[in-house]
Image 1 (cartoon, rainbow, N blue to C red):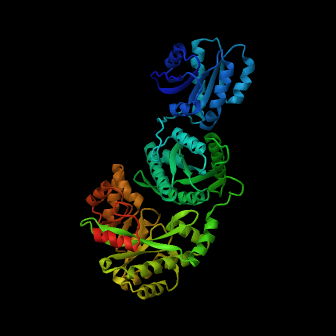
Image 2: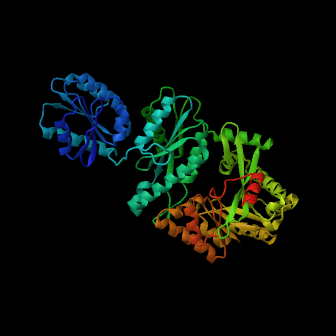
Image 3: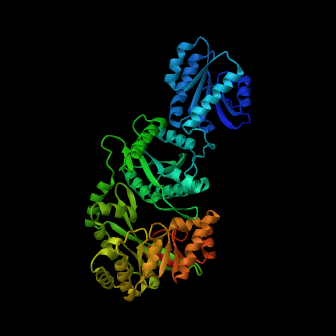
Length: 559
């Protein structure tokens, strides 16, 4: 029977001993350890990870063969987590020491020796672990999508790999320049940055993957693992690079961090340890490169990112008219009435599932199809909205314009002709400019948008708070609405500092005479706080996801 023996202490120590003697437990406890003792090696890897210990102690005195087996069972885990593994052997078993090291031991102590020698050996092992960053507070793993520790992630991987069937892909993500943030702004700012980064990773995983986990591994590294087609990993990695490279609102100012990602697909007979070792290798290669942000290691032939193949697929999808447009409601906070919608592109890819606008335009850029895609989405949205039933006749329609659209000669006339041809009234149309998009000539953009406003349209700045040019855009462009980026809007329910940032954005917009729309609102708490700060409108899952025209009519009819 397995037993666990615990005593109070500063750091956890995992003790594996056939004897599990009170003497050894008490000796370790006297050295300041909280001892988790097990009587034999059954399921030892899982139980060691669950302990959160950075040091494992195996008592092989009198049972050297069992000690070698136990060391072999823990060796791979020790190697991948950076923990220390100390083995106690009896004098005279010197011939087994080489086998113990080959099995994964990092330290050994031949006894009989004094109690002080054992305590000192444990301290040496702890220093070894500390040098490679292994001693850290690791909570008992919680199996679920939202709050996994590194140990919990390994357990999830073991179960997923053991179940067979679905492919498993791992992305190991590292934030670069994180040490500089800690040094410049303090540890609390670093912790805040890590929390924001984790939320961004979870958002991307939730949008693009059907069954995934996110875990903080150590330092500024995160793991994202998924039961999903391997081809999707490239799309996820590129989205993560874009999301994690955006400024972080910490220490009351925007802070930048870089990112490197290692991607690896599970192979036949993989265990969690071997899969994580290859992910670490991929990440190390990405970090060592001056030009590679994403390094992919997988099965033969899988080194290329699927975005290139997706670009080819997109060309065929446009030819077959497979890009659809859905509509997400925008709601007046004061009255709870749906007053408008934003048109959003969707592509139901036969192999990768439903893909959104960001992925579509990433592929379009690779295929030199960005303008063609934008034209198609605008035309389909206008045509669909012009055919809405009378029930929807009062709703505004918001359409996104890209930086490439704005840079096109004569675009204002082309766009207004498209609007008039569709039959949708200009007075109910809003054009949205993405704040994170790079507009080379703000003066020219301002002139074009002024023409559209003069023709009856309204103008919104979208995703405010995600790019570098926020204040410059507000100063230069003729605007009617400011749309708060979903991550910023959701932060209002976070720390008091988060709320101050959102409040400042709303107050600034209102002082400029702009109405404020919050994106990505998902909870009543977020909506209540936004309302208290003076936000005018919202959109997000709290009301509805993006809907077809028929579903939108049903929602409005039932409101």
